[in-house]
Length: 565
Image (cartoon, rainbow, N blue to C red; front, side, top):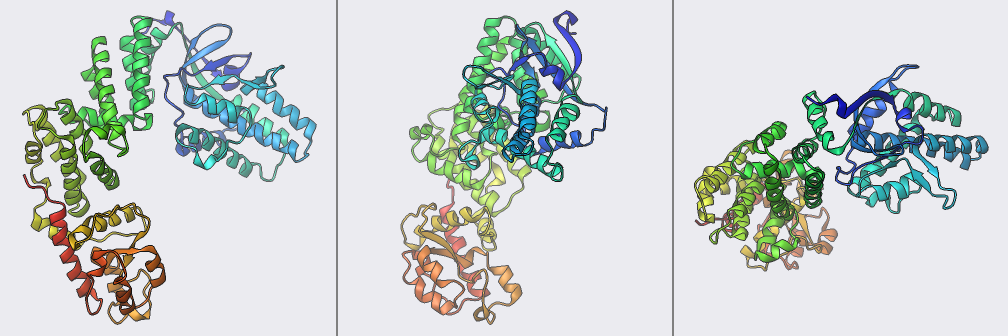
């Protein structure tokens, strides 16, 4: 039970929270601004549905009072930041009226009064707006420089991460406001919308704690009563609450946490945590992950041990998404396999790599293990299309072979994967009928497959990222009358994206060919540097020719992606 002497609870509207000169700061270790279109639209709909004198409860904000009307936001920063951005969008719309010479004096005064009430005050010497809200270390520079000062960032479309989210919120609300007030370009109406409908009708349950140590005890109670938090927030506040026995220990845990989330992005942290727990030989469920982790971390000693282990694993986990990471300099050939796995868009193997690294012995070569994962993925997931549950079970079995049975070689791990690895016969039969739409995200995958098979025609290794080589559809995607004799309309749909109908061709030749007939294409194929393309010699191109060529490709693919253990 939380000691009531540690906290004070009350309700407050948004204008009351920010009134009387109060200022708020988000601690540097809190997560970056993460709200997106779903949360913005929910808030906007809640505001739209408000009626005169009605109120809408925005949930709980947990605050630690500092001094002189200053507060640290323990929880609620996402909501308070979003409301501030909404207010800035409204003030920006009022300011735009002055630029259009619509009651410029009155609207300039309205914008100033609303800023003073909810957003910032202007320093008399520097004329810089001093914000009532300071965000965390990562976000505050962008927030203050552009949003609070009313400036547009250079190259908005190139923003990433939380900066993209912050500017996206401003753009979203600006669009909604222009739609709502399309026929009412009136500064008074905009000001009333902000002050009466938004600032005075959105109500928070305000919890003030005396110190930061008691704040995380409060958090545990709030969570037990249904406070909606992300897995990342739940874990962070749980760890902080366990370590909150002294200010020194809490600051140390906060520093460890900040280091951890700087390596693994906050948005990716739940996946990282899930894969780490799986790497321990556990079988967690994502929707119950925090509860299962909590069972593994029960003491303050556990906190420091887990944060240390997570920090070590985080470096490797982040590198698994980046083939250019310097970590791969220590593992010859590993970067190429990481590039393949990123291209395949899978992640089940990551827990296996974490498990292998944690018990790394001389026999476990991470480069060879990554090669195993890449080949198994191509054969089982990309071509044989094994379902996700089957793939997950196989990797969990391999992890348990490492954790429980001491598997200490790539060969032993391969054996533990069991039947996930398709036989050559199964792989060839699935490859013979494989097809991929080259107009979408699979385009890079198709090019990778073709480039990987080029050496099996006597050619040299080809980098799939080479821009001068493109995917050629022998039967064109939009065939003309020259192709109707060989392919019916149904056949055209069935065979145009079959792998047997695809080949490599220089971009300059490809552009010139277009949807020309097969005989003309065949002459041009002789000019290509691709041995795969030079090898095309069917007297006519037909469903039979596509099938025959794809069967040949399947035989070569079984050689290219084979594990011999």
